[in-house]
Image 1 (cartoon, one colour):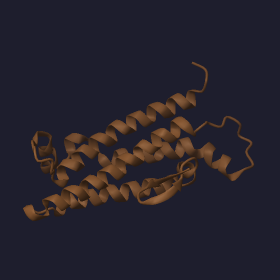
Image 2: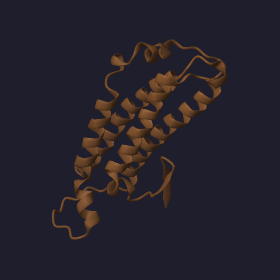
Image 3: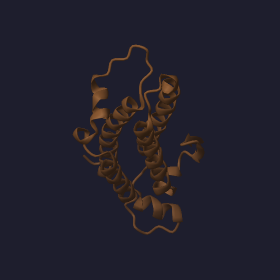
Length: 167
C-alpha cells in the first residue's frame, strides 16, 4: 500500500520509520508556507477565495500527515524489545520511538503556546464568517489547535504501544 503525503507517494507500512526526519521536515515546510500566507495576505477581496483554498490545502496536508502518524502507530508499529537486530529496518524501528519523540518536541517548539500567537491570528477565535471563505489566519489558528491535539493523541498511542501487552 502507498499513501500520498505532502504530494508524494510513500509506502504506508514503512515510510515513517525509514524517513522520519524527511517527513517531519516536509511538515515544517508546509507549516511555514501557511505562516507565510498569513504574513503576506492582503485585504484584496479578489484574492480571498484563492488564499482560502490554498490555506485550507496546506492545513489539510499537515492534518493528514499527523493522522497518518497516529494510524501508523496503531497499525504498523510494534516496539522491538530485542536489541540484536541484523536487518537495517529493524535497527531503524528500534530507534524510531526516540526519533518520533524528538520530532514531536520540535513540532511543539515550532508551534509554541496558543497565547503567544500574534494578535491577528488570535482574532480568528472570534471570527464569524457564514460564507465559509476564511482568511489564512483562521486556517493557521485551527492548524495550531489541530497540532496541539494531535501531538497529545500521538503521545498517548506511543505510550500505550511502548507499555506492551502488560498493564
